Length: 225
Image 1: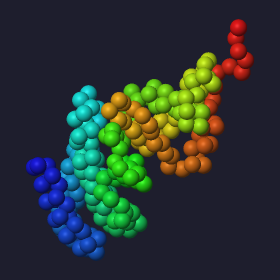
Image 2: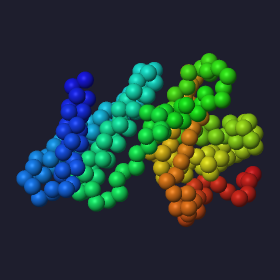
Image 3: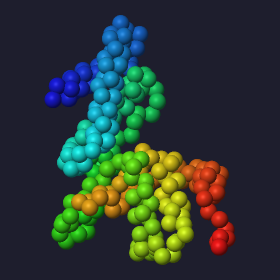
Image 4: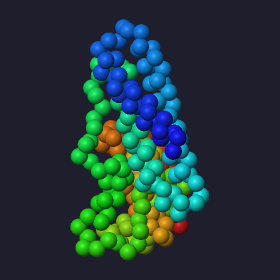
């Protein structure tokens, strides 16, 4: 629509002027370029806000229909915004990494592709991977418990502490890196998840020093009669 046309128009002009901007920062056109950069950042922020609002709508079927397209729009504008920020810095820093070999759609699309990889036929039930929302926590804990015994239900193994596995294997990621947590949804609801951390060593240290101590009071070492 109109916003997309503005993004493309502004980005095209800035990209064509970008190289000369880096080489000739003292010239008068730099001020105008910076004003366009500010406008472009605003347009990219509007796209991100649109995506955040979409993921929060109660009409989940609509979200699932629109999700891949909106995610692709968000990922593309974020990449362009990162490039413009690099140009605005004078090009002195390392240029943002690009992944031309990756399919469009970002990390979610790549994970979606893995769902059907190696299958002789597509799954009969449609599945969608979307970002984690705060209200998903209980369902992710439940999924962790129901697959906690080498892929089968572990509910009988933890009758007194049903959240133990979730607090050990799911909760830390949701608390530390909610933006790197994704939820697998089918026609019946949440059925899986993908969790990640930016720095494993830092993450495990944080778990040991902070997370475990925060949940420890919920668990006792002896059973109470």
